[in-house]
Picture 1: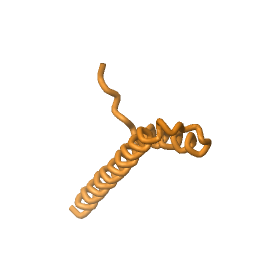
Picture 2 (picture 1 turned 90 degrees about the vertical axis):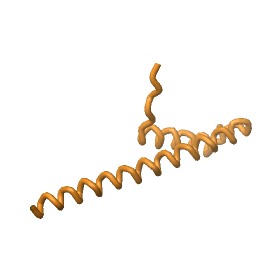
Picture 3 (picture 1 turned 180 degrees about the vertical axis):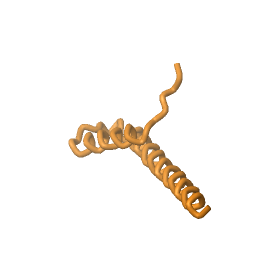
Picture 4 (picture 1 turned 135 degrees about the horizontal axis):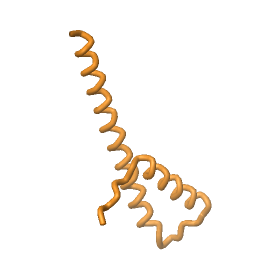
Amino acid sequence: MAKKELKYGEAMQEMEEILSRIENEELDVDELSTTVKRVSFLVKFCRDKLYKTEAEVEKILKEMEGQSND
């Protein structure tokens, strides 16, 4: 079975769920290290996704500017 690609919205939702568990003191101390590692991964994933999307949008806008100057 193919591994499902993580989406930005899914990563944000997972982080919100983890935050809610922490705020409601539902997170067991035994899970804390694993959970912090997961949140670290999710933050990096979201940050990278935002940077890549920003670069793509800037590239498209520059291409559009070049076409309008022709």
